[in-house]
Image (cartoon, rainbow, N blue to C red; front, side, top):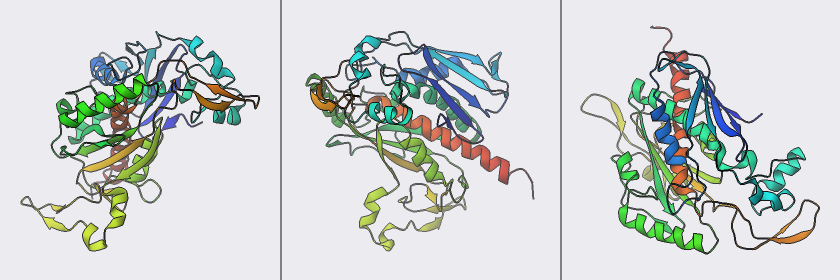
Length: 365
């Protein structure tokens, strides 16, 4: 119920933040594909806690184990199970959250829905659940790259009021993104972002921002009208991430300030005889179907809900109180959200690539 995502390339995540571990079951992965555990581990290391001075100090290696679906280094076509065991749990940090609701967290709504919840670190509402998504995303990325040459690069575009302007989504590389701990390819702006996150963390508070993500090299034709339009599934994937509060594709909300003649992407024929668009305000889709241009999305993330600053709240029994939350939390989720956004984009595109192949490439007319 709500833990499964995708159609032909389908994932189900499991586990809680302070339980025995977390992971994912991947169904629909093509057989005979070479899978190297180090490739999955690389992506998990980008997501893991404790990786820098601006992330949560929780110490987890997030070492992944492939439990099934891979034999002698190749996928078998059967479900792939990947497990990461929790090592640095401190459930005692959350004892007061058993009865006291953190403002803007899922504590109150989980109680309202289920009447019972795992309060240790947020349980399933914790960002630790995304380990399964990132592990599955690593496999999806490999399929996309190997089959169609698709490349997905995410980066921090904005932290609070600091916005990076010196980034070219057409040429930005993974090395550019990983060149600093905030994962912003604009080095000058990155230094200011790091300083701001450090300062807000020392004050016991948190801040949010925007992750931008580009997918390059897509074929035309991905997307299933009308309810499974490509941007609709990308929006669902992005908005299912913890702390996400907004989604844009292409011109996004800025497009509302333009006229049709200003916004329309004019067609032309390139030197190879391909139909292209001179601009890309559509963000790589038209009518919910990929047009061969770059997919460009932005995801807005709110400030981390759990903070050390004292806040007014209520208890489960309806009493007003004050809470200064304990525990180890990111003062800003953006640096670790980058691989999460990339993974959700990869999962959506991989699923749609398989769906396109199944429906439109089965019969050679």
